[in-house]
Image (cartoon, rainbow, N blue to C red; front, side, top):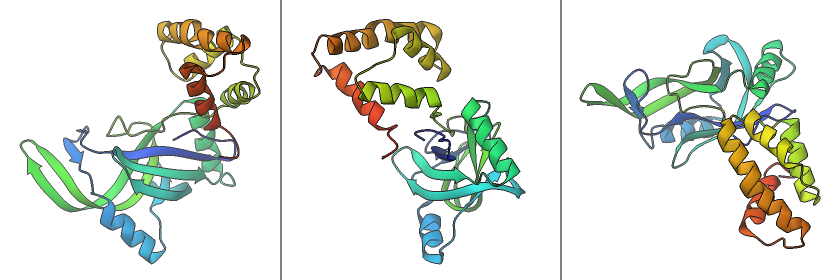
Length: 217
């Protein structure tokens, strides 16, 4: 996911291919292909639930597809529901980040003490506190401060180094690494910008990253 917007939209991975989960299972590439095709053909969608509870739908999945990493989804919370608003607030605050799939097994292959899930009928993807696959999660939160950072960078008015460091730490970057990134790479990029040199790789990368947070994208 690029982030959780104020409107409730977000992206994330419901499942990561080839990663051994807490149940000793690995989801294999192509596991969802037939199920997703059937959903498209029938005009249906896997549900978005809260903690796998079928009595608590919290949103809709607007797009689901496999890529080289896993099952990637774009969804949005239904903010007219109480649970949808709560889930939205919790994700924006970073209190929870997990995603987890609910499915019926169609084709499974033993692999020593583990199991390879080769074909699955995808029923739902939930926002959860403890995902079985620790790598299946909402990847980032688009906070108001991140949007401010992107806007100021695009407008040629980058935020001070200390504020950028704080922004990195809010996103979960360890303190020592945040200090290093802000005081070296970021500081160099904005210093070159103030001197009129705006074509350095570092600055181009920052501006490209900022475009991802543009409301027009």
